[in-house]
Image 1 (tube, helix red, strand yellow):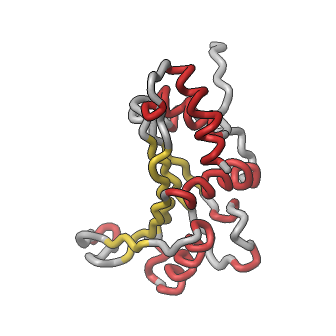
Image 2 (cartoon, rainbow, N blue to C red; image 1 turned 30 degrees about the vertical axis):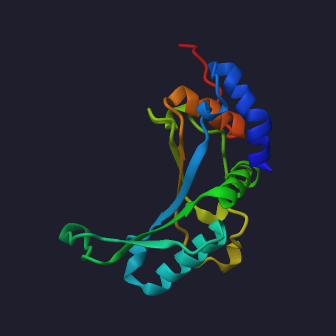
Image 3 (cartoon, rainbow, N blue to C red; image 1 turned 60 degrees about the vertical axis):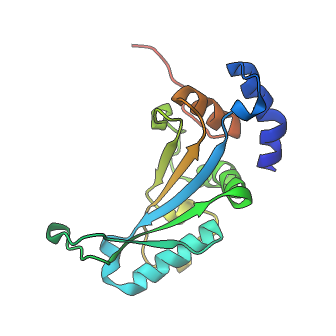
Length: 182
């Protein structure tokens, strides 16, 4: 659905806006990475398993464990200890996830007033963080043992932040209206 809309509506719109001669010049979403840091939860394997289940439900695929490369005594981290989980989404799953994120998850976030346009980096990529994973529709609040945050990174082929912002707005991401009243 979103992919078809991208090909039929968004590419021509971006071509007109930025003057691309070829449709291959139009920016597109290349990959979406969803990750969870399990730092303090890693003491108990039960919490890590719950985070794996949560991320599997949200993304539709099993996450990869990210492990500490070296020990850091101040953070009580040992080499090889699981410090995070990540899912890399491409293709159909990526577009399905983006559509669910825009149309279902954002409206469920408490006191959500839109994304800041400043989240866009110089390469047209952006990251968003959720303090509670309960905003995702697959999570049932009565089954949750520990609340944790979720980070979503959207990587695009945009060459600058203006192209990335135009792509994100065209995909339906709700951005705040900027006002220049000082």
